[in-house]
Image 1 (spheres, rainbow, N blue to C red):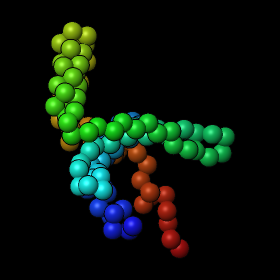
Image 2 (image 1 turned 120 degrees about the horizontal axis):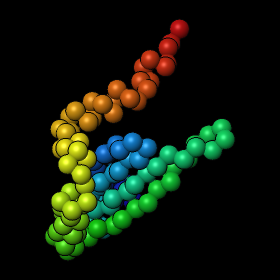
Image 3 (image 1 turned 30 degrees about the vertical axis):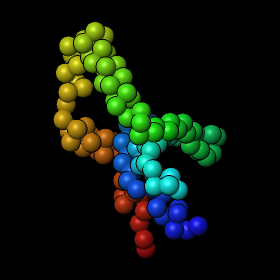
Length: 116
């Protein structure tokens, strides 16, 4: 059973986006077939604690091309028909610059935890 669990998740990539985090995971079935799960995770604050609200999509390999085509078409439509030039320019910032900005905005655990 453990062997199957180790084999189940093949690859994972995380995308932090403000209050949300997206996970793109490649997994395998028992018959060594592959599929992708896309998970949106959002931190929800309660009075004194927090929890995570998660939504998951399972994307099977036979649908990859159709999914990518629809996603790209939707993004292209938003960029060309709905966004202003300023909004479009802000989207075209380099991913490194965006990641650096997000990292600077997040509190550093190393600054919060001090061992004495």
